[in-house]
Image 1 (tube, rainbow, N blue to C red):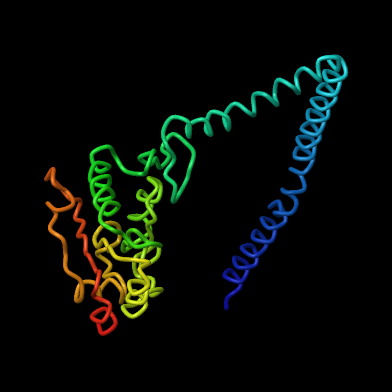
Image 2 (image 1 turned 180 degrees about the vertical axis):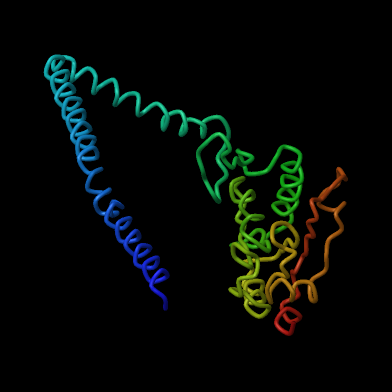
Length: 242
């Protein structure tokens, strides 16, 4: 390497070292900014302390109004829940899933069916009561939802398949024993949850008992709500074998 070039390189490196010395390090810049941040934080604490002291002073000054104010706030807090629960007074609450609120699930009220369907229920109930029903169960249905209106109207009704209509609580032989003792006679298929297939007792009724024509128990005609009334008197053997 010749001397002029060596001198140029020395000067270049010297300039780089000088620039490094003049450049402010990151920590130096951060440290310089700390006082302003600290001052900003101090101002915030002072403002918050002042607001707190002012609030305490106001509370002490109007302490005589504290009791009426608390009573007012308490009553105000009761307005919303009272209005919400009052919605249950406007319509009958649906019994299976009772709920309050502006969009609550409402039921039909009364016997649980509308006035049009109630005529069908009354016609069927009248027929059963006047044609020697069972001593314990005047009418047996598939599911509890179908028997409920009859029970509310005073008929001794029950469900062969429980609430859902598929409960295996009763089978053909057990139903046959009820008939043999004179405790049951009429079975109503159809109604709520009947599309689930019922249980062994309802299937035995289909195979062993005769169905009564709708016009026999519902002479006025019209919709029978999909009900099918079966008279199982004298069919104990067939039920036991089904």
